[in-house]
Image (cartoon, rainbow, N blue to C red; front, side, top):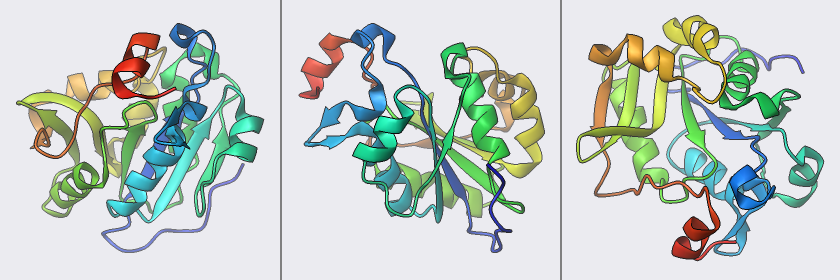
Length: 205
């Protein structure tokens, strides 16, 4: 799928929702479609990104992608398929970055399985970018977490370092001193939903 048209305006930060995983530890249930508060997780993530201020939202799908397209209500979002989703999150990050519109100044990377991350955390990271941050990450008690924001100057390096399940870890590790940590513990919870026990704790599934 080709890129969309140019994005203009310094506030036009895009969002990437990484939603391609097959939910191996959930018995093969694609995380994108796991219900939480009567909606699939992918809907929560996309809605948080848009409500937090991201104009363009791209959702990277993989496992059960046809079901995600037909069952999830994602108005205004662009869905791109990762045919190599089984290789890990890194391939989804590469696919998502390649799909961004030309001129996108920065991208906010959201994980589909963190329903405790909402619009308030997204808005804080976008504010950090407007204040000059080219790399930013939500922090919880001072500890780096998700989501993360990557400025366009780092896109190529992010693609080069994205492999396996590492995602942007190589990029963030190489530029740890440049990352603006944005405290979000008062407005978000970083826990992900990986196992049946996690689902039970969150009342999901």
